[in-house]
Image (cartoon, rainbow, N blue to C red):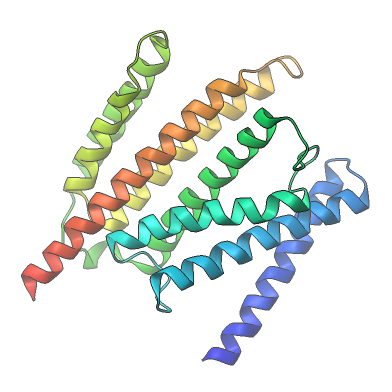
Length: 243
């Protein structure tokens, strides 16, 4: 019901504000800056949700059409642009260095899009109801191929090989259903983020390659976009064929 949904949404945004603010406080920032960052995060999430709801035109927020994936990516970008003037991170303002703004915007858009798309599909869909059955062995093979592709790209980073990452994405999107595609995409993305985190933690303070992180996260965003887009195209086609 609409009134109940409004209360749940308000409670969720309120809890998000508290969590963001407390987390930033625990990281050692002053209360005012922590509150500002919390407000920016809530504004970003709220605008992303409203814009996405307006683009898809119905209350079924879980991506169920290929165009929903495109709308979610656009909504994630709009949310980032709205949060930017508020000061969404320490040292990030409209007057900040251009590269710093670009880096924050790229990473924030990537996390918003990948996280929301994969989690919504995992929560709302069920693997047993997929119109396209997926064998577990195929998923393991595709994860291995994806890892090898990423390894090749960053081992030979002086060569233009980034396109290789899209090959397992196309393969996965054309052979998996949406739920399996979301699980596969989220697993691959979390593995990359974990590897990045270990690298940053073990590096000397301030001595890590932000450019390399941006390239890798942008690649993974494109990877997830292609996988989910193609899987929803195939799922929709299978559903219509069954009808």
